Image (cartoon, rainbow, N blue to C red; front, side):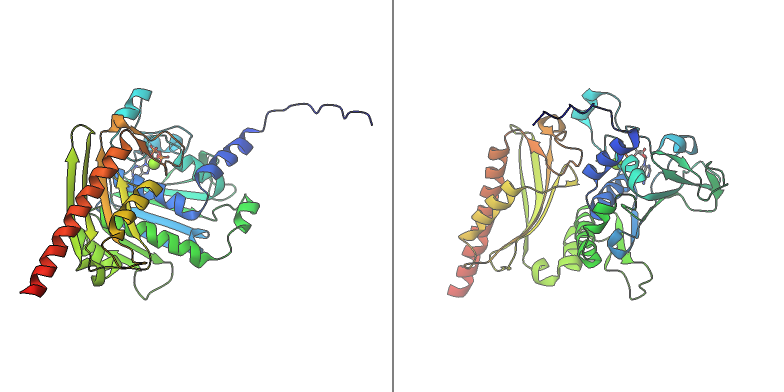
Length: 356
Ligand code: ADP
Ligand code: MG
């Protein structure tokens, strides 16, 4: 058989490239929401409301009372790599805010219908704009794409509709909207525990039976855990604190004591105020608890780790869900030592009480 002729290599069209990039950052509605929550917190908001329809596939709306966006910045807001948070690569090592790559809003605009309404302190009105493919877009054929003046309070409202409308294969991959909603509630719940001083609410659009998540700004972390995870766990919590200058870290948290035991581990982990996953930390903490809990029992723990930004490599992947840092083993060992000490203390006081 004759060899097939080589096919010519061609560059992908820019909109295809953008859609692929967007799909890598935003795999499910919850990933879009995470970026939007972090943006709202970055903006200094003290009140955050989330509204969801169809597990976020039909509608994701987040309203904050933060500093808002300058009208002059609206034309470039959704371009890729536009950000108010990072100017030079070196800034990556000293960045204090969550987002830093200016990719979130751009990505969302490539795979959903996006509307932004925002008002800064100095502005006499709010401004509303629609976006598509990174640019200002007209809301209806024949209408101008320019931002329109609106009545509105200070802050920003981001409305994301019909996520993945132009990525049918991705859209079809979602079997149940309640599964997606559960992930959204879990994520909002995590930030609602961590962000003291900020009120949170999350509900389904059109559902008047109240919010699924609702915490007031004044609630303490313990109150927040009680509200979201029940008093069963909240009344068995002890605080945890440890730090070490050698490894450039500080850790604060609330962990369940030896009286509490659940079927599954509840882990709320924040590194430099971003919710992250860490299989290493989860496993080590579970191991530490295993000698204190009945067989098959699991702990609940909320840990907020602050690590000197220069020691953290957040540039692993655009999603930034995976975080690596220097001296990970030593830091995890110190945290587990602290947990062990704290659990043994509770143990002795208990046996002391039963003896007396
Ligand atoms: P990044 O957060 O990495 O900068 P984003 O695409 O998430 O990139 O956001 C781009 C810019 O839009 C931000 O740098 C910020 O200036 C502005 N922005 C986004 N969301 C908000 C918000 N809720 N309130 C105020 N400004 C916002
Ligand atoms: Mg961001």
